[in-house]
Image (cartoon, rainbow, N blue to C red; front, side, top):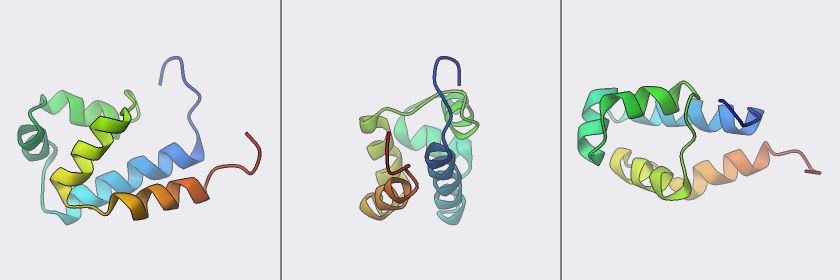
Length: 83
């Protein structure tokens, strides 16, 4: 992730997004088609080469039928107490 510091919380988010996509029975290509993005978009964010902005995250969560509030809570719980 050029220009950013990878964190345990962000890595957890990526792992959970991949799990949610596979649990939904979707390939990267299928999800990309569903959200109107190229397949390379999926691979880059799942590998941490590209960060998702908030709106992109919400679109992905909706497309895979994931509980966004629960996932955000999990990620928030992994943030350090002091930033």
